Length: 146
Image (cartoon, rainbow, N blue to C red; front, side):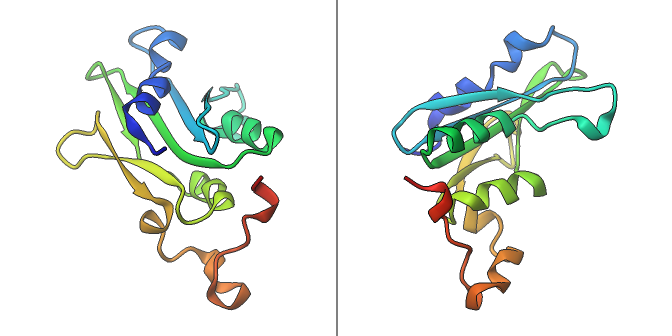
């Protein structure tokens, strides 16, 4: 069970969460058991306290002790009235690393940033700093796996 349109559609809950014309983002992750968890960013007056869209869903996955197999984040572009698929920022990449190199992540299509395609985490971040530990292998996913 990979990324799929069902997961991208679930992430579009930003349409329900924020009024049109406002920026806003959302995320969806698929768990190994097929469940889909969603999340939204936590905005604060103090910007350093703001949390990314996927944080809540990743925490729910850890709480359930079920690995994440795919992740997608979207953000509204109010100037053009569209929702963009976001490639993973560095923070999301660090969080995705918990579930290993095969976890799928959405990246925007080159020709259409409102549509995404799946890439394995290892393909998006082949030079992860985590490879510098444990003799060039990625850190163990054991603490985050069933």
